[in-house]
Length: 96
Image 1 (cartoon, rainbow, N blue to C red):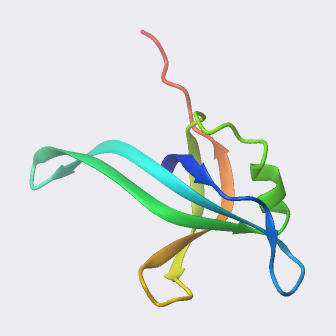
Image 2 (cartoon, one colour):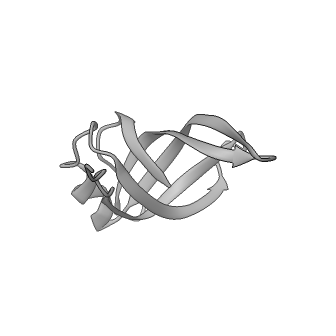
Image 3 (cartoon, rainbow, N blue to C red):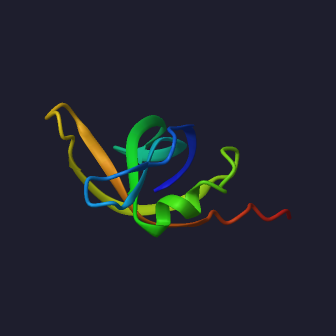
């Protein structure tokens, strides 16, 4: 998923002692649905656990990135959380 983070909590630790970082990711883009372009904007709660959590502390919020991971039910049973397993810089647009 291409997105940038728009909210970031302080680094915390799980009961097992692993670092964890809670984020809110924002995606803005366009998709084709039923042959018509559709603007897509969304925000999703996300979490990174382990060494990746510490690495994300240095990622500027304005930097778009490609996020990989999986969706899981939130601990409170309300909604879903995107569990981040990887992140890489988004390809910058090329000028013609």
